[in-house]
Image (cartoon, one colour):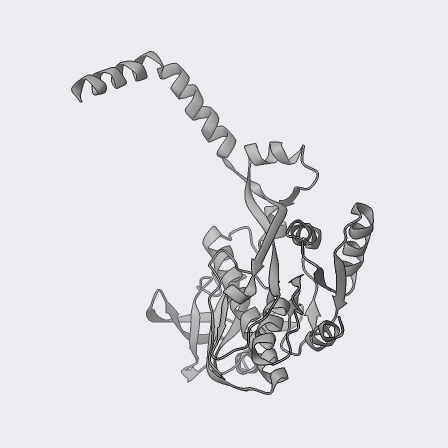
Length: 336
């Protein structure tokens, strides 16, 4: 053992210049830059992420399409110059604030996923005629405009407003509008499992009284039959709302909407059932084609038009299904 240690030290000594140059080159190429890079991703079988008690089984599959995303470094930026399918995005276009940390971005993406899932569950259960009710509501801070006026952090949970339990976003807005500019609102928050009180200032922005906070409401739902959704932490974001709702609805009803086909889809889902457009749709289309999907469900509008041109340009055999609502998506799948 001692001989190996001696030989190792001798080798390092003889090659120290090379090792130092290699280390410096590695640090240089991997140094983070204020950019993010998007490229083609793949698909995620939704049926492996949801469990509905005594739910029916599908012969085909519903799948989420995703985009691969990397933090920009000198190395990845250089590669991007030679890859036409890689898109470089400035950090300020990707984040809400220049002060955003990776933790802030990850938290917002996770909350977006939770909101997408709650909308998917609500719409699927309502459309299938199943029981669902709200057990509890949580209110999370997603963005702070001015920490001097509002000493809050992304991820803080608001429990009380001026000593009253927070019950809705409209309640918070009503309190803000009832205050005078310059007044303080006392918030009881939970941060890192500890409660504390902070004061936020009311100020004017475009002639509107605000506190400079973006707050998201997340609901705990009770369903009959019970459902468990278990996406991985890296599978965050809002763009899977539509396809998740379709997969849940399919488990709650007797008719199999997949009809034995591999169906890939994307699109945000609002509480009223409307489907919203998403970014990186062509990367998701390419992922669906690579996975040999039969159908690709896509939001109507620019997303659909872009996909239509791409299908014609590359002579893809995949069939596009353009939808503007969850209900329309269900109806079109029944007709295929």
